[in-house]
View 1 (tube, rainbow, N blue to C red):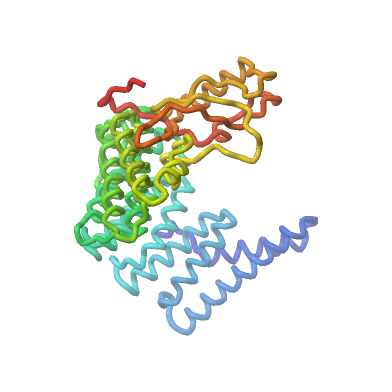
View 2: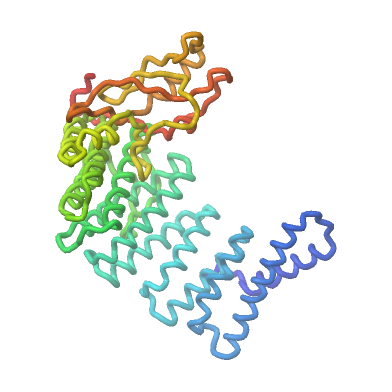
Length: 431
């Protein structure tokens, strides 16, 4: 429904008000004026094209859908959300009239409507649009059809994007919906008929990132006692959030990463590095959930694969020779904190990837209490992929650059993304 807004009248009024303000205004920002003029030209082009097609064909000619999408994007760029919503909804109506109420061609329009409704704070309408994408795709393709994987991945990305822009309590409804979608995605892409591909591996890793996000949310914020009305991927309503534990999400993420290991190992074109990286990623997952024995076993297997190559020791050293900061939300889950500046601070990294004993490298310098405390706070919630030699994890020393001459105002982002370890309570955590 277009909410009683005449999209063409609104667009024409927008264009008229722009021309009036440009003519009588005294803006000195020539670049901004040029940009606005370009946008007004594009707006006028779309409106004229719509008029011509409607006059020649009909008010719901198939060609109009793309024009309405373009018109909506112009208004959305200007934060003219009411006009954008009306254009997207008119395009959606055009698709339904021409291709059917359950046509998958509606998907981009429904996605655009969902974003605009979200921007307007109309979350019920927004969720309904997203859930309708799932419903029509499921109906058109079938629940286990491989094409559902791409649809579900798109919906997962939408939920995570909006989860990150909302408060923890408000955003939790996105995690509930995402967990349903994640389970369905896993079922689709782990079928025997699905072959290994970069896309499949990326989707499995995306499942692990989602499960980490949910587990981290539960660890930091707990689960709201009541969420009011929320909507699952099937469109059904639930009055309260379901029970959840970090361990359940640990298992789901672990299973996704084990599937990555399996698919990579079964691919005859995979290199030793690719196989080792999939195992090391699984080890990182175990370590971030304090599953230290399992982490060590995964790192050992990765090390053995590397050492079995012609340049075994050298390859192992290049891969495991220095601690790497773990970030399960990144595409590359473990990175070295290196830059072009000479290191100033030395720290100890334990076999379990915990940083401690921060001290200045130069003998004539020392860390102030403020600097030392800041480093402790910054690295308390982080873990490093430890050094591995001949299959065994080792404690090590690690040097990084910290400006010891400046005031200690370093933020978490300066030292790598926050990667909170999560206690699943199932393994000993000594070490």
